Image (tube, rainbow over all chains, first blue to last red):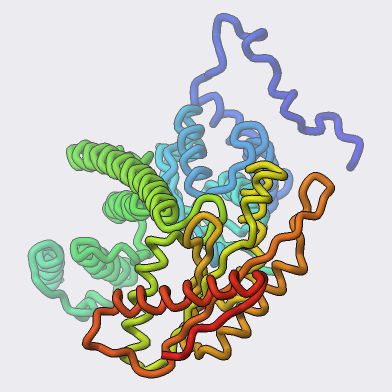
Length: 173
Length: 328
């Protein structure tokens, strides 16, 4: 699979200022979710729910890597990393990040995202839905620390919670 | 059947009421309601939520209830906010004052104002501390300069600027101390006085600069022949004096001889010429106890006079030699 038609690069996001001089860089959230959930619908039909989750998580991971490289850059201190991430996520209206626990030595983190781009306001289900975020957060933590992370959403709007809570544990070799 | 349903409803209503108002609830749903899986789950959720609420009220934010839904979600949101506030407070305690709270209404404003004030206070404290450290540093420098200046002044006041030996005044000061010590410990003390022979000829033949250099040369040579505890000083124009603590006459004569020989055998090298210089020595010593009925100064003056007389005898005897006064 090396010969991709759209091998991802940040350039694929385009020159928005040039391309949308009147409409600008933002769109309605419904459009984002429309694309995500129609895409998810097709993927689930084609490959099943588990595979669709896996694909979304992997896409989130790729996005997290690119996002860190282009929006955050090298940061040495976790406090600075958390602050910058909070700021960027809020400015880009992705969500409101809060850190609940950060044990750098043990590689254990608990963080929450309120007003999440993917799920806040969705109908309630019996399962957590933010698998894309799981991959995204894993890539951010990995990019910051150099360690692999396993991220699991433990509370989600879709399971009746008002905020999404993620548990991240470093993967020890 | 209708009666049973009515009884069940009453139990359920009481249960719902108790779940809000009662101080305690039974750990499990009473039978026969416990047999209903949906009702049992609902009851377990209520019990878990009550425990979760109490834990939060008591400051324990560690619980992770499995209950889902609106009520649990709202409580978890509060828990998430308080956990984040805890983390932020830890960061602030570590000196990161950039954190702000934005999810706890009026408390957020008060907390943020406190952080701003705290940061300003810490900055002010740091600034004051820096100023204080700077001031301490400046004072240390001034004190060091003063000490150095004092040392220089003291050195100037006790030394002869040409030869850098002690001057006559300071020699007497040290001699008084040494005589006091010798008296208390019943120890001997000796004096050597020496005067350069025909020194006027050096000045007349080679100039005063050569004369000054000769004095410095003699001082340096003498310094090498005495101990650290000996007090060597320039006594007058071309006259030197040395006090030797804990030294008897014979040993003092040997020291004088060593100095004499050093001077004789090391002519001054001046403008490519060797200028021979010699000196005549007089030695005197107190071999027995110092008579405490006299002042130490009288003792010093007397022994110096004896050494001086011996030195003149050395001059009269042909110069470049050592003469000793009879032991006292």
